[in-house]
Image (cartoon, rainbow, N blue to C red; front, side):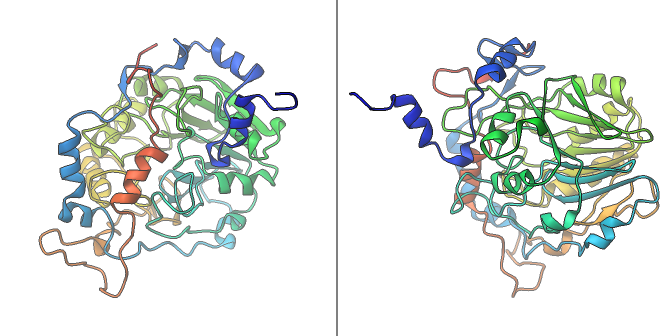
Length: 413
């Protein structure tokens, strides 16, 4: 029909903004040239099943079991540390300070520069404001109160790591965004200028001030829309300054590549390791606390070193395990390994290696008594609401799988 628009651009215009944008043009051509891209999709360093395995019926029994559902949320709102702009404005005495903001969001102050990993300040990790996992605790520090951030690092494009409202707020600053290949398409759609985006393939680096940011391999997958084309990469990250080195795992299953990353870039003063949202139904794409500790030791050359900060837990309900289980599991794994760990409440700054590293089990007063259903916290405090509906939405929102006809296994490259 004369004057009508082609169907595909019209459909693209209807795509929700939170879905982001697909890579195209020169960006897509670069993706296709990547040594980690084959058979039309990005590949993992070793094979990984990205769709839940096992019996759906058995999973449903576990998921909807009343007692287990109760334990997936805290018995009362999780506390946050009253960090202020003045606290963060004071330079760290050691030159390295880390502030866990919840989930995988971490502010790292390293050798005079500030890097913000996977910032998610939104109320839900979802493309929709009315559905999806809601926070189990408030944001510890308003985004505007963080002060100047030199670099924002994104590990991959799932909703619990790449948050539309947060990116839009940061787009109006002068910060540089370091992202895996393809993720820049989302940022550009959301208003981030192209000249402030550094898109990296695995083992590529970029400089931000006096820091070197390197994208390193991870074992995961990607996707935000209804059909996942696997055209955006996922990564872990190394940040190296003149005096300190840190590592952020992003989301990943355990794989032998941690030893290679450690040999090339370690040892690290601090690692931020994913230890939550794991399940026997998706064992290849998220690590258990024991696997996370094993990854940390691999990164450090096989022996205890530095400080491990457990991340990807305590903020959103994304798996069938009790909400506090990752903290308990990491504590036990650290004790067995003789490894120093940090256990801050969200928003609590600490300097790795210093005597003041927080290491108490702050979550225990906020857990449910599984045998009685009693909340250990004051009964007047309402429980979190990230229950079955929200967590089910999480599997759609933050773990979108391959599209129809694509393999359920991402093959090793």
